[in-house]
Length: 334
Ligand code: RIB
Ligand code: CA
Image (cartoon, rainbow, N blue to C red; front, side):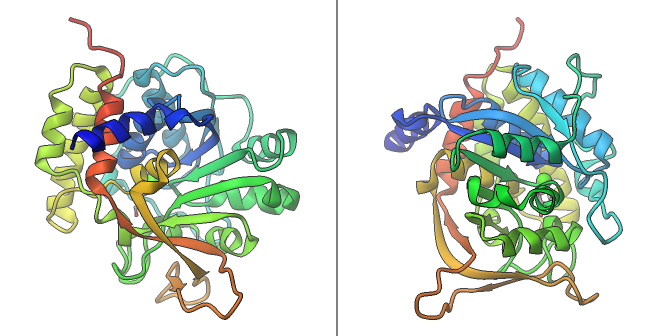
């Protein structure tokens, strides 16, 4: 455990390597919020250029408000929150309020955040940032429907070769679907966007249900976080308690998987995950299997594949990193 904590500390501190410049695109969302606390709390590893938000778990105005609210709790008003697309590219919107509550943040006390949102659109921000910064220096994490990134690629295809990495939570292979029998929510919510991103040739790492279902907030892991004296740990405990209640009532009945946290933990410490090259395709035509991710590991000789698929996670390492990060949050007032 000591070596894990040391690695978690080194990873959160960036391990001596320069921080990754990151645009974090999300639809908070209870598990997005946990991932936001991880990202906001690891400035030595992640140089957050912006949080961009998208309609998904709840509507676009709520995901933007929720990102601003989590930003304020984390004490990171230096990071702009840039609202984005208010609906998927083609299909009608489908939300996941049953898993995230009416506010999108479960039972977390809601307040109007002090700092406003950035006065621009996420798609423009993504294009302008990638076109203005040096090639291969900006990465993206995507933990909601891929609408913003896909629309940016359509608007300005020249951004694709300039992207350093895309770490996306989405899809399922061995685990089957969580919103339909064959589709995971983020891909199902905007399958056309996911197909555009998968076909783009960007350096894509997919952390799907196959791996996120290995990363569960067990009672022991939740208790370690609850014992921490910080505002971020208190908020995270509230969110994880809600997620546990919902997972037992509506989900698998097991401890709540921390889907979106995996996409951020991967960028901080890739050694926490095993990934395999694959040919990734997304179903956009069939009503029965819309949003299904077909993940083919049997590549032709010389075929590099269009994505890497995460198959294994060091769940304890992910939670050690999160716990270490939350322990450094703003301390609760006495
Ligand atoms: O399937 C899990 C994904 O759908 C997560 O990103 C969660 O926030 C929901 O959006
Ligand atoms: Ca999400």
